[in-house]
Image 1 (cartoon, rainbow, N blue to C red):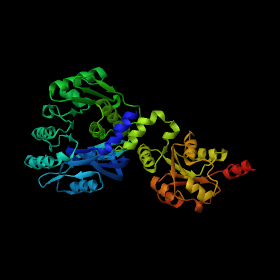
Image 2 (image 1 turned 180 degrees about the vertical axis):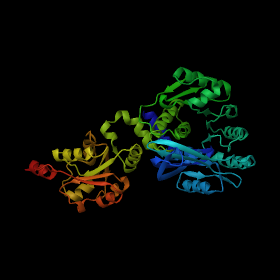
Image 3 (image 1 turned 135 degrees about the vertical axis):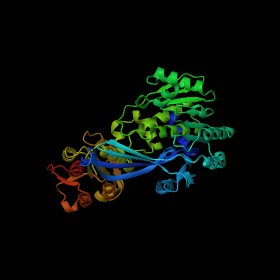
Image 4 (image 1 turned 90 degrees about the vertical axis):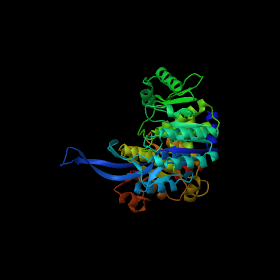
Length: 483
């Protein structure tokens, strides 16, 4: 594991050139309210829409979130979707925008309608990229390749990359002695020959080679056929979903990396994450085995997220170390980590509860409050005052236990799902960030004195004043111990 963490740390020095089909991914979240009287179709009551960089854009976004830097070459139209792509790229400080705009092209969009935890419909807007603009793509790549450590080609078969252009891009990178990582598309793969590695999924590889890639043996045989069909290729990596991945490097035995069992929410963009992590690992001087393991870990994290979400280096590091961490420690997360977990829970219809406190010395009163809170929600998040915050509230000599010790004790309880340490005097910023469906405090608080109560009520959330157990408080416990 230490070797993998060293390679992961090397991602920060990597700079990757990404060329390919960029698209605007729109996720429209809704609920099904009724069947239309006009036709036998569900009526979707739209609640929110999220837009993100898709295709090659998602590859670049994952490179950046994993710690590297990327330059993105893609094509867009002079339209509203193209302007939205520009705005999204402007929010990414570690991605250099090298998009090419064509008045004759249309920006590719994928619009997914999601209701009741499942995708109901996908609508695409696209048009072929004008081949006469390919010279501009190649000129941009020529100007950029020398400043980068590798080239990623992300082919979604939307027309931006013709076979001839792909061949020229590969030749350009190899002339500069840069590795080329290709996420291929289609039945005919010969125009990818000369690349360092290609990363088809099992369905693409099986269709292209007319062979199965289900179990380990079949996947290895299909990978071998890929290497035979593309004699200049150094390696083939076949992603196999819940079965993990298979890597075959020319002249070596196949490596099968199993996927960790996990709750899968959305496979959108997992292939982009594989390509990003693989490219970074190879640039960071990882061997093929290390690159495959890191790509597999990153993809496993990606499928637990909503939409085409980016994976961070911290998440991969935590994944690599998770076998050495106690389960309780995995529940202690940052605000951003809590928001991501809550988004996934909400997408599955879960009700989120929140309570907060110092929890300096756990006693039956604490257990009672937490049990009452958990009984009214599906997932309970506890906001925990940091040490400095406790000192302000309780005075010198407190807390008796440090914040991590208190957090691990809380996280060890079955009724607690997440613990978030906050340093502010009150939990108001945390409550506003997490937007819980249920806010719980003890009945010794008046409704008007509960921090966040008005905010939670403003969007229809519930505020619960939990019953107290008499004669149980941390202050009295500490007082008796000192006596």
